[in-house]
Length: 468
Image (cartoon, rainbow, N blue to C red; front, side):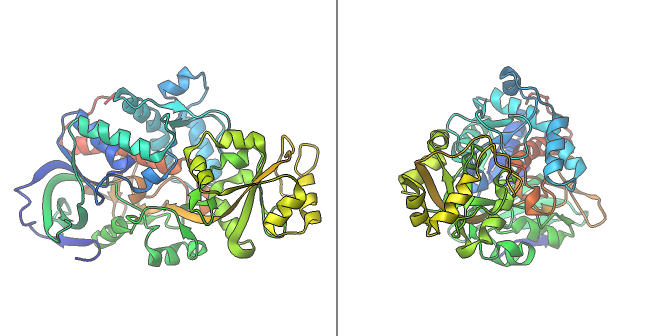
């Protein structure tokens, strides 16, 4: 069996294994939806291709933006959904779907509170603001990793009664004459196929960052970039949607990252830039305003000689960065180099010392920056440097959905029982890399999963309590 397939008619064996709600993908989106449904007593099965839930969520930093949650209020942070929505649209230059922006920012706090009620001990990230955010609203577990987030969600969802079927690669969707999804065919490691009947299906599976042909077609700027996402992002959701006649949206949107340590292949937190660090190319010059965002920075870095740059920062920023496990792992891999002075740093980069001195002398609160950045301080020797390149992390376009996460056909009508969120659906970043606001991926996953669960329950004639 190869590629996503839509089949019509009665699915063989679907009556033998049938659940009210099937969810393809056990990342943050699928697990959030499954937890909410299972907690309400609705039988749900998660169909997961890997032996252990992972996906893009586990590869992320695990930071979920939400405005107005209980933990945010307890921290004394003034914020609300309207302010959050304005930040998203400002980053996307007003091109993000207004309905989805309103739905996700409106649901995010309730989603976080519901997860907290199931034992996920969130705190609000302190110390700096990610580009484009006007309030501290990044929610993180103490471990500060996406892997810890997915593991905690899995424990909560299965503990609430959701079924998790691993090593099951969803390949087939069965649809009847009325356009209802009736079953999912899952390929098992031995080549056999399990058919699971369902009354409603949530696609929480993937984007297309791992599909080289689709990346070349839709994201030409990333065609030669390192892919830092999950191999399961093969575009299956889009493949099924195309066969069903679904509408697609924002396929040019994606999350890049301009701080992928090379050759270590590790993510370097953008906190390094926001705390005063700079990116310098092989000529010893800065080339963009680093505070605009790490997503579009991927394109800027790839445009430099050799498609590389150096993150340069000082001891103060090093102390901050060591609070992020990803950075600590990269440091253990010898990604960070330390230079006592400018000549030593220039030798490391391979640039002219005089040019580098001019670049660093221009970094400070007293010097106007031709690139438009406002610096609050100067960098102090010794200097730390990490060689980085630009990478593609995950896509932000996919199946078009409404505010209830219902998949829409070419005429804008909702399919009877097909829902999508997270990487399977369009996000809230518009149609370009520059529209990605930090955390938009997990916002779509967690808020989208929360909303999709309520919609699936409504399709079954059930309602969910607000706190579930």
